Image 1 (spheres, rainbow, N blue to C red):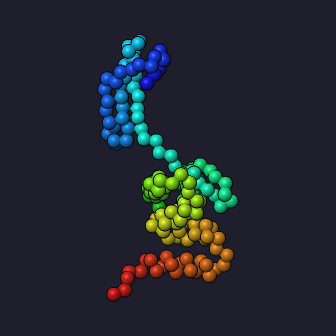
Image 2 (tube, rainbow, N blue to C red):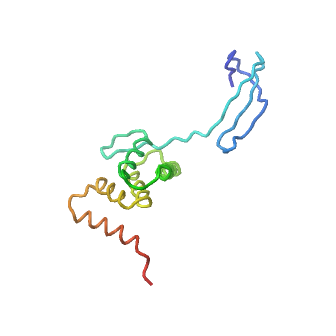
Image 3 (tube, rainbow, N blue to C red):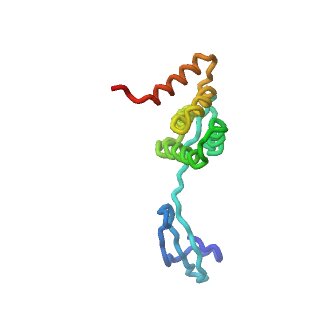
Length: 156
């Protein structure tokens, strides 16, 4: 690794430590040329998949868009910010663990619907009505009936 002070290519690692979270490595280094010390960090770099929209265009994954969608559906609903953050994290983890380089936007919509169904049934209906483009009351009734079926305990 190059020394940030003299740009010499040869440095020596003096100390290596893993962070408390276990997600990075801290290395204390010394330049063999100028004898100055500096610290470097190694972290895993995971790239989120590219999102393929309905029209075929591609865009980078934007967690802010995901958060905005969830917050809009959950507006004036009794769901904590921590629960929303956890849902976003679960969606991001599912996307990362898929190992795919590209994901169709519909897959993200389905993940959002699953998370909203867990968080708040009303928010789920709100989101589903837009996401699935409900065109009449019957579609709302079907979605409400579906949510209602999930809440009932199984009959013996």
